[in-house]
Amino acid sequence: MAEGVGSRSPKYHRIADDLRAQVQSGALAPGDRLPAETAIAQKHGTSVPTVRQAMAVLRAEGLIESRHGIGTFVRQNQRLQRRSRNRYGEARGRTGLLNNKFRHDIVFAGVGDVPRYITDAMGLEAGATAVVRRRHLYDEDGALQEIGASYLPRSFAEDTYLAEPTVVPKALFRCVEDITGRRYTHAQDQWTARPATPDEADAFDLTLGSYVMHVVHVARDAEGDILEVSESIWPADRLSFVDEYEIPQEAIEESVRSDV
Image 1: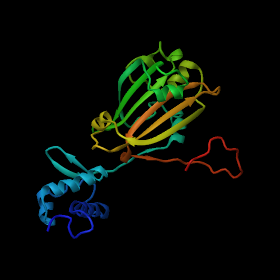
Image 2: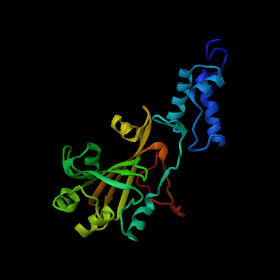
Image 3: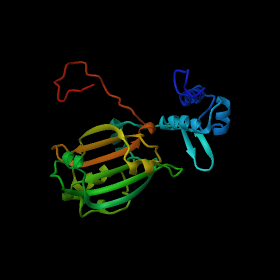
Image 4: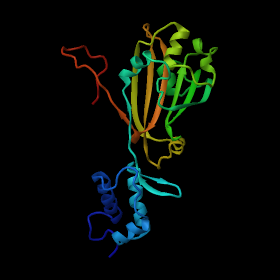
């Protein structure tokens, strides 16, 4: 009988279902090595190419990962938690970087071009430049966890150490406050889930069609002037966004209505 004939789904889907169930039940725990493709093919009475189709499904779901020359393993899904509302307050109470769990590599710093969606956020004309600080953040195993960039107005940042490709001595916003004498008082985050670009997929070692989470963060002073616009990108299956807030007990005037 041809594969998939007389069944409700193709055989590779049924193999993926079986392996997924083992992962979800804990029979295959995070870090466990999956059986060899030939062993899985024998168990299900099918071919190795069909098993590879099943593996591709689980890899796209973020359940497994391949390690070159070693084998295929259940992914250790320890998601990073981002709690945007707490970040500034916590950083004001300590020294060091805003995200001090990772190694920071500054891949570019200086006056540079700005994407159109950033110039829009900064209130600049299309094609305008800013002081740009591009960074990659790596975990203790050397795996890339975040791609980010900060865009600062040239008016105060161009002739300072913020335009130099070195890691700053403390959270960037505290450096900006020191230089300008102005305080960060209001921030807005815009989150988008989108397919990874080819460069992002290559950098994060993602499979084709994988998604990333992209946040654009706009920070202003008490006068409403831009101090910083930043963006950060993570593989979508490695991030958990936590938003904790007080619930108003009285009616408030709507500013921008939520769509969902």
